[in-house]
Image 1 (tube, rainbow, N blue to C red):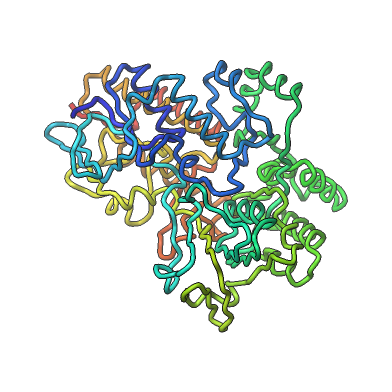
Image 2 (image 1 turned 180 degrees about the vertical axis):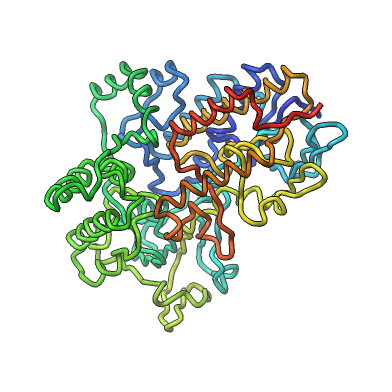
Length: 528
């Protein structure tokens, strides 16, 4: 089967790409999805407590005003079933399902330089082809399994949060969980009241603030829907489009009392991005300013957690420079007698044996269920497992051997007609509107290619180099490189620095795209 375009992945990115290429460009387009339903990240992540940390009315496509009017959201933040339902409705609204093959894995793709098209190999060994390929594999989609001795032979139930089986119950069980990132925090908060006992094997204590989630009044929701255009217009002038009014005040320019007041107000209002970006403008660029936020959150942990030993174990000592978490009562769960936290950075897990987790110090924890909230090999993880070969047979593994790179997070040199959504170097911003920017741009690039009667388009090596340098410069202007975070690939042992994000923000990224247009797409080369 030969198509004009093939899309890989049925999340926010893939569904929108299918709509744009098929309906707006008139290309014969087909989408392949490994899961048995659409939703992408929100199809796979069915774990208890799964929730977006961006406001409900902003965690959606911005281009479709009518869809928002029909959309049903009751709380400030969407829960996983609501997000998946939203994407299922989007697929139905635009009749996308007829061009989607579910339960179909894409094993790889090879560029045929003579025919000027991609040969796409499916999981069953069959091959389809397309002139253009859009890879919407997801930023956070390849599960990261910790290298623990005995992990393959654990005798109890073992579940990675991104592959949570429907119908799983944790009630009245002895449960252990490894990982306290965003997912782990949500799972712990959700299951703690119902388990017989919960042991949190903590590798890195987290800075987390209240989410401020709750049900909205009908008047509040009506106000959002009536002011749709104005809300999006204002949001798209912000750096991150997360729904947090960004501060323009330095933490150094106010008194200690005023800093405390601002932090307290943000804590009570709720929202991780609100706390990091809405309090002061230098929390991620200045270590001293960052230290003020650190100490405030630690003081809150000590206030909330009654057991001083637990409280100190839960207090982070490093920078407040990972994903800014928010929660629905995370620290409060450790006041329960049936919830314990174990510092496995100080006393690492030695092995799993039978139903037991055994630490290097000899301590043994008998469990019925072990939950792995150990995150993802972010950004390039799904690419690195694929057979993906570009011009001259170069593999993506060779191309990215020194770290994942791209031009605009959209294209790579040596990989003609291959477009990525959420590739390395995408703007650090609210995903749906950022995805719209990228998909609109790739659709535009495809149209330019067709209008010029060119066979293929690819990013110039010089363009890619300059963009990587810009991303590196912006990243080094923050304190992020000093923190071991998945944002730079530091959660995967031995992984080279990966520039997963452009840290200049949504608006400046949009300006870069406009500059590309104004220069008549000279950053790209076109093949005849």
